[in-house]
Length: 440
Image 1 (cartoon, rainbow, N blue to C red):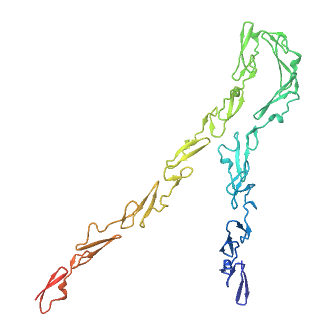
Image 2 (image 1 turned 30 degrees about the horizontal axis):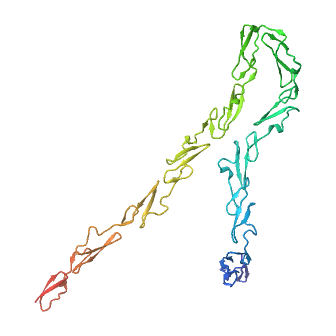
Image 3 (image 1 turned 90 degrees about the horizontal axis):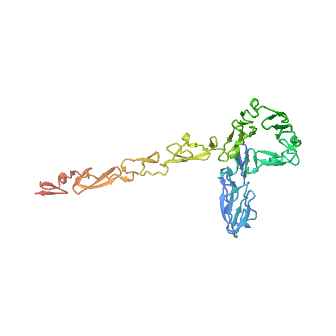
């Protein structure tokens, strides 16, 4: 950040504040100035500047201001500052969708990791900073997909009819005289067009009446007498069985009623389990399973452990729509894929080499040491190598301290005191241990 000025073959540096020297390489110690930090604050020199460590009760760049814990508020993201003493405070973070925690309400809460999931009724949760968003399945709404969409709000049931809300659908209950899916048609059966005690139905599409004639009658208004043996009044491919003076219908699967005219709602008995959605079909139903389940009735919890996701002999625990690996000693990670380095704590002593193994380690000892951790210095004095002396053990070595009169690496050589001819006047020298004798 300094500015260099060149003049001929010389240069000069204009240093930024906080630095000095020919090349601006020297940091100015601002703390050398006395009383830089006020109210007993401690000055700490930093490169190019300084900072003050204030005593309790003061704040500011130079500790010049009295400290009021919540003025200004240090709490972030809408958190409320609450003064707990003269010098302390706590932040009450916002609850609900925009969630933060930690001392200053700065860390985002991942609502999608909560159990149960923040999104209800099968909604898909996406976390973002300060909150989360739910993508709801059909029929549900709200921030957490807990609100059943009122399909009657936008339904087109005609005036005077009653709308019944269902999950992702609705039905219209028509007043007397009205018919059709939306009760928008006049009920043609009001005029009783069907004769002979016939059952009158109104076509929900066009509003025309449909006469279900009693046995023995036919025609649009059931005014014609029929021979039951030659006709089949059963609807939806039902089989007509003629009886004396009458008949009955054997309905195909999925239909019921005297003429097999009614579709059986197989979802009425709630066959789908584990919060699955039931779709009624002709003669059957289909269950839309929640994540983690399968089967005709969504009765089977999908075993995520079947693929053996846990490695290194980890034990897999099946959970709803997930799995959990219980790792053996020496391994960690989501699927026990991480071999814990048992050598990281440097257990081997005296310069030994540590070799990591699964759930263990091996120490290769340096010369002269032994033991599981190479903690034992091998006693090179056992057995005692010194013949006439005391053995002192070293690291992969020993030293012999010879007794008087002996020498050599292992004190095996007796010193010849006569070698220097100590006897005078032709006296005869007799060598002794650590001494000699002169025979004159």
